[in-house]
Image 1 (cartoon, rainbow, N blue to C red):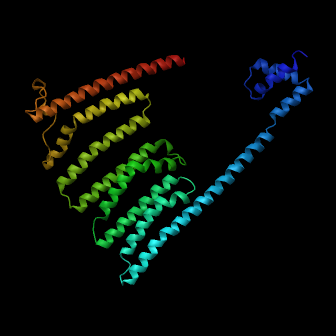
Image 2: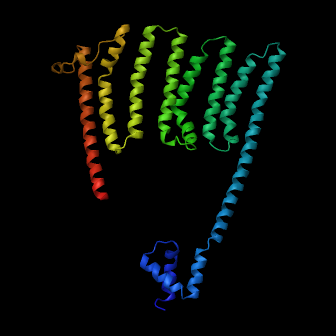
Image 3: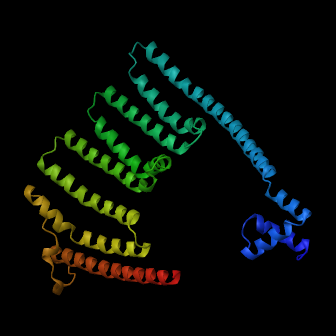
Amino acid sequence: MKYDCDIIQDLLPLYQDKICSGKSRAIVEEHISGCTVCRKMAEQMGDNTVEEKLTWEKNNVIHKHQTLVNRKTTTIGMAMAGILMIPVLVCLICNLAIGHALDWFFIVLTAMLLVASLIVVPFIAVTKRLMWVIVTATASLILLLLTCCIYTRGTWFFVASSGSILGISVFFAPFVIVPLSRETKLERHRAALTVLWDTIWLYLLLTTCGMYIHGDKRYWYLAMTISTYIVVLVWIYVLVIDYGKRNGQIKAGILVALSGIWLGVANDVLNFFLAPVGAADGHGLGGLDLGRGFSVDDITVLNANLLFVIIVVSVCVGGMMVCHGIVKEKMEHESEK
């Protein structure tokens, strides 16, 4: 034989994994065609039956262990749910014993549901525990608010519920939207979905507040104009960061410059839209007078000069970041070639 069996056997693992060179592969094939021992060894290496069986057994053991753990946690969760039912039953008996209708009992019941969503649900939920805790806790809180509102004969439910959902969503919406989007084609848009959800509830809160206080034209102008100006900037951030095709440094530079300009012209833009209802404050870039510096004698001039400096500095810093990012992109393209 042209090559020793020891050499061929050293090459067999690389041959089976298809990571050896074409010349080495040809040598191995030529050798095993005439060597029974090396051919048998190559066939044994290519047989994945044992490996597949070990993988199946490993997965089976993990599955059984997970099933056992889930049963234990579910049992604990049900036991805790039973314990939480004790004060509910006591309140029910007391409520009936003193001759009252089932009024404040429902407040206790919904309060216990809120507690259960935080304590019991993590033990009962098999997957996505945090998501289910957030969803059930939010639903329980809304039920509690509704029960209290009905009991007190109030009209504040929609304001309280929309404000609560918005507050919870700002911090916890990603923990619900991200796991749900993984199972759909929307995973690429999870940031946009999160901001969309928060935006909807922000405007719902503004609407319910306006209806609750019977807001006049001035309220709607102020609430919607100022909120929209801020929301638009948030959406620009999402679009640039999530859908921009350039590198991170270019995106950051664009957002730094844009944020400075957005802040600098905020008073002028808002004054323009708020002028019809007499809500314009007059403080903007119109009072710019760099010759007077930053004296506190005239707040209008001071405010305008500060805003102008913010615009200039942010544009300069953002421009440098964009230039550096462009140079970095060109160097990366050249290195790839």
